[in-house]
Image 1 (cartoon, rainbow over the protein chains, first blue to last red):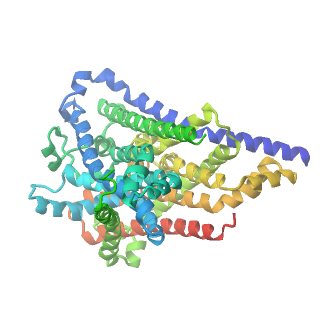
Image 2 (cartoon, helix red, strand yellow):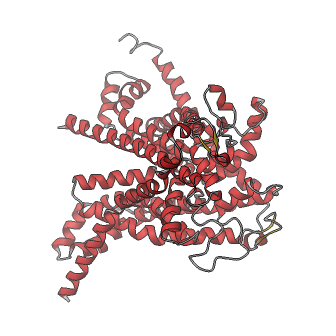
Image 3 (tube, one colour):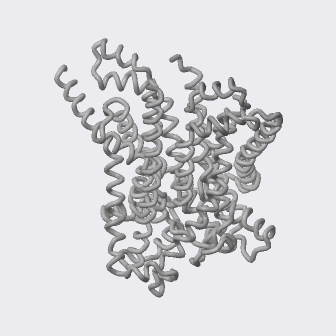
Length: 298
Length: 287
């Protein structure tokens, strides 16, 4: 009895420890398989044509620049929406809203985070883009701008929840100090609370942007999918195509092991590296801020 | 200083508060609007035949049963892999791990998993499960892909609720002669259960609504019958909505809204269950 208990305990402890490392294993596995299928690209397509402005796989034109600029312009537009509205909503929830309002708003914002992106894309096609086409007098409503609007909505919950956490963790004494000095609530928010939560808010913005770059279905459905260079601000109102949408739209039709197949994995590798960089920087900002807070308290 | 104490600072505050409130309202209104709009538009498409029938006439008529069943299969498949693994990983982080470089590496890996674009998960699933392990385009490959994507959500919410259990509970249990695992299983996990359940459901909710990871790992455009084994491909609600709203010309709008409604109700129900579990647990908690 005693012995079997020890044995079980031993095995279970081992299994739990192994599971603990699973996340590391999966990140490495993902990276390995992207490299394995993506790196052959560099042998099959030379760098100059890869960094070209023409994406036309049927004739072996694999210039990924239009896809990168497409992703950048849509993400930029999304950030213009998600950052002010996300931070504004976080400030409202954490600093201004009465308690009952907070209890309603937080689950609602969480709900937005859970809405399937394909549903937003669907409404984008049927409702938003026809409306924008008439409102802005465009030849088509399926533009980068439509994508940015929806993507902004998708990135907002991320920004709100992280920024709100950051604002929440600012000690109440900071605010009380400011009020005691005669500052209004508004002045306290701008000059004390937000600056104190700066690193967390920055993390929120970065994670929101990361979420927007990686979004696939919505942008594939509403941006028109034309692989043209987006170089000027006006490109915001014409069709573009992102890296994510290209993978999703074309992977189903390529032959395994073909050059086109390898290039799509190569794009996936670029996306993986972007999200890696964004997340490593975002988390190191948080770590550094924590250390500073500890220094202040000690 | 004069600016800081100027007399119109209360006016500034009033204007500022109104602006911020307006922003919050503008953020939330579209969410409510979207849900109501789909409920209203899709409501008339819902009938027993729609929910229990197969699509026919090139999917322009009939029901969406295979897509509903498919999404159920994928969600259950995802749960089978991600729930035990995710909870075990959370137990490790909360109960066993010390704050070392390795633990920090695990946390970094979890954050990164959470940030990887869903379509990249699709590529990975294609490379590993479909081609390398030769599962083919199947429920199994798609579920495994979705599991890895869901893992970070489950780990971080489960860890948070495990950590919320007071240290004294563990000390008392150990002092009564229980082993570490007995303490974890009978005391810590039991107390943290509502929080863990909330995280699990929210993670699975995301998996159920995802399209990009299953595009090349398990989703089928159209199938005349239900999948017979885990090695069959399957139709799924989100992919079906994508297909009928972009790939099928002259698709009746009623069926599109109906499909969106069913997917939305599926996801909202899970969300509601999670919210209820969380708030009931909070109300009942005595520590």
